[in-house]
Length: 516
Image (tube, rainbow, N blue to C red):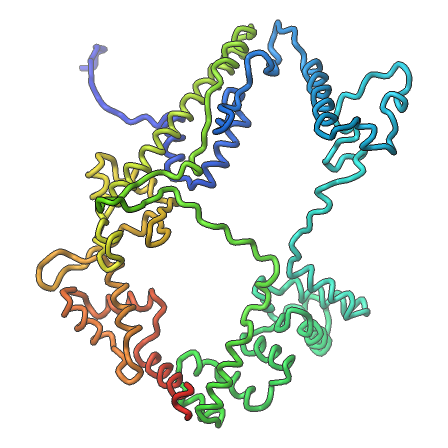
């Protein structure tokens, strides 16, 4: 029987509030993304201020702050702007040691140029001090900044000088648009012929002209054609070299014996031709429009102490410093009369306070996780990568009483500067490989390092197969399968034993010691 009744229940639930979602988002941001996020929040929230190290917090004082436009307020933005302009003008004249009329003599005195009865200038543009691209600005400083030349622009400039015929110039521009960032022609000639209604002979002729442009090797349809264009420019494209380019697959497979038979050359000629090929640029288009490499800024510093322990500290340069302007909030809140204004100020205060707390909590969490990583991987910092221990997120999370997802977010996009170099925090988390004698397991990263060391030390006539590497690793106490060795070797971009043997024999035959 259904009947209404009261019932009391107790339960737990996780509510994802906007503040909690913000804190989670801050954890996984890199230092660059975090700085951009904080800058955006400072622009949106009038109660947030940057903290300056030398002069204290760059806060708006309660006396000279520009008031908000609220109902019942008698201050106006125009009064503030006029005072700011007067202060800026006086400051500029004092810094320059003269009056502005002497700096801009062509403009003449401002008072003389102003018709009687007009108001004083109310913008920097009217004072003749604008640095932006306004209509009244004589000099635009941004106009002097040179932009990076892109590959299509570079080729289009050469096309105008190389081809005068309008029809062929259209074909050439269409071909340039098909060239990818590496410099290769991405597309089929047949599609160009059909789309433009031209003939194959005409399109091929225009392509041949485009392939003479700088950088040399541009507009090729394959690697062999790209190298052939560059060799032709150097007058080195003879029949033997053409045969060599036609068999590049043998060079990639390190099958030097078959390559010598196909080109009918000896060891000395082969070494010389390989040297010439290596001097060419397989991707000529990458020289244009490449974005500059951004250096990695570490989030954590680790340095040794005299007692053999390690000191872990956060990089203060990557930590945004923001403060809540309590004085500005107190003054503005007194002037607020409308409900919407009070609600807006209250929301800004709540958001600002939470952001400061979230940034502080983020810094503490990064410090906790980094300190535990250093404690777990003490052997790596002291003796090198061979002593890297297997480590997973759960081990660190249990040690610092946090959830695995929190540790995962903290280790994302964070870097640690150590005496052995700069490493991503995720580098120290590695899978475990069992020990052959039942002892402590080994880190997968340490095993990969040992595989590389074994291969680097092998002799040209004693190249180690994957099975031989397995036996050597088991002799050191590492229980590993052959397919795992092959997987690690391929991940390290190390060719097979057959390819390595061919390459090392060819190098030893081409070395000066082999030809006294």
